[in-house]
Length: 245
Ligand SMILES: Nc1ncnc2c1ncn2[C@@H]1O[C@H](COP(=O)(O)OP(=O)(O)OP(=O)(O)O)[C@@H](O)[C@H]1O
Figure 1: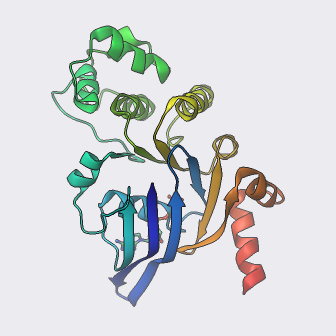
Figure 2: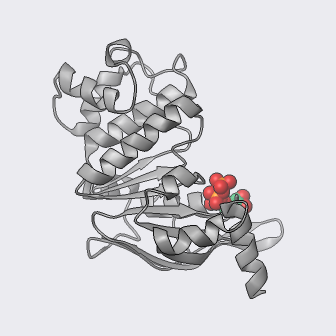
């Protein structure tokens, strides 16, 4: 289980101190599929970076499986079972797709096992298994390869930052199926940052973050009507903020 306790993140820019994350507390229970949504610049990616240890909070604590991981490094958190897919996946020169999948799974996957993961993310496995992970791959292909590595890793907590970014509509349909399968098969929990209604629709819980704060959270059935009552999730967040000002 992941728990953020009164988490804050402040930065210093030319205008002085600026609160990016303001006293956020949330829990992702084991086996849950949780989606964080909200307007651009609200603090969603920063929250993901704090969970991974890429950024460090200026206040509050992060707990994972009962252990305080606030001061732990990215590597230690990964070893504890937290994995992360970036908005812009990393490219590795000289490394083939199969190497990446083997690295992720931590064992010597057979070619057919590795192909299975690629098929799950909608890639024709034989065309990709020996491709080098370099700039010859498109952004959408890279994204899907990265999701395949997360499937291979089978982490306790998988965090995805806007997995839909850079993926065409055709592949998006496939991506939804990947997440639906993950939701059914994984024993771990999944935390996805997304603006997509189709992804929100398969969530167990939805958390809306705007202006660095949680402005709404609850089950999909509780939150979706509030979000869909207006033109978009973004409008819903601003509407909520207007109502409390
Ligand atoms: N290290 C930093 N220094 C200064 N400002 C930062 C820093 N990190 C994040 N920000 C600012 O904090 C705000 C929140 O950024 P963040 O990337 O978390 O938003 P987001 O909700 O993920 O947005 P999007 O939906 O556009 O991806 C933005 O205004 C961003 O410019």
